[in-house]
Image (cartoon, rainbow, N blue to C red; front, side, top):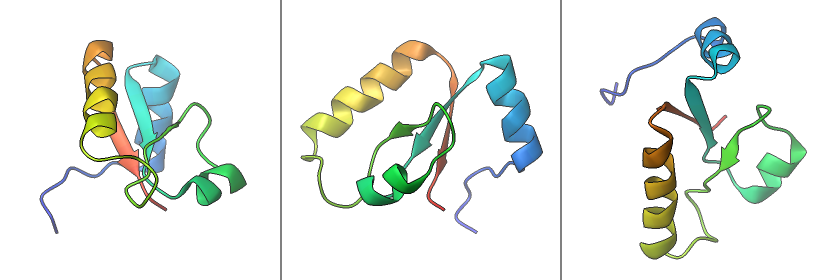
Amino acid sequence: MDGAARITQAQLKKLIAAKTVVVVDTRTPDAFARGHIPGAQLLPLEGRMTWPIEYEKFAQSLEKTRKTVVTYCA
């Protein structure tokens, strides 16, 4: 394991319902377009965003929410 915390789908559903989480989809834009968790924000780890400026802006916007961030890639 990589040390990152893991949660179940049931736990994620509860967090989303409570509006205490920001969900970030790290897949490609094509995969995101085919289907994603409702309300998820796209932050593809491959390709299209320009490092590091766009990622820094995205991270700052997440920080401002003061919510837990959950990422997924599958």
